[in-house]
Image (spheres, helix red, strand yellow):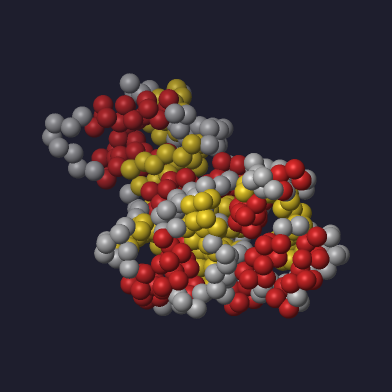
Length: 99
Length: 301
């Protein structure tokens, strides 16, 4: 779904992240909402809080943290997460012009 | 000059003229009232607070007066006003002093956005502030009164004032408000605690106030560093159980207990996050006050 995309936090700098252990709270300054995120999502925001990355780079980071069951569709799960975060205005997906 | 050094006559005269001016932590309050019971309430519970002269800057000009002379005899009532504004509907005349406490809570919570204000009691021992957020009925004031009766410093019973600039907790050590069964519980637990009149049939049931310790009032300009954030829950017959709570979950739970988190926006989020960074976070279930006090005294070492 996001093969040729760059995934990052919104450029408007309205997203603020705080990390504790394997969880994080993401604060959307625009809406005033705070989101508690754990598991794969927390890793996603840890990576994105440093820089925008491609889907492949994001998967590489996630795979270095988690061990999946053989039949688990990690890519599909990540795509759904990104889609949800995009709807909430927590991440921004742009075209990867350097690809 | 301490309020308790004034005679009742002097307090009544001040309340009836330009108002009695006194200092509570970082706030200067002026109260006018023709209700005689208010003088007794102040002398009993605010005796250790400093009286201010007429030149002092006043943060909150407040008054407690009957809304109409016509109702002096038929179901008499009292109104609370702040700078001439009436934020509440009148209450029964007998509840005037309780209305002052609620009104002052409102004044502070509505106008003090230099602080993130958490609906929490907060006490201090060995330089560590223990913050107990909780909804009404969670037992936070009972716990607070019990700890203060055993020598902990009262910073505040009703609202924790967390400075958005330095992250410290600033004291506003007003009387501790107890409801219903908690009044008897604390009278049994701390027979020496000074308690004011009990107001019956209020919207919250019976309400009694415990006078803050003189030491707490004497230190009302000294802030404290947050150390523990503990969500108490009184449950009849339960064991004393302290359970660690993840910091992320604590943040969301604490945000629900703030009066002005949304008003402060990003400052509120950052202040709360910094508080949680600096604190150990727990949920706490209890029914035995002696055990609770012993546990927290041990934690504060």
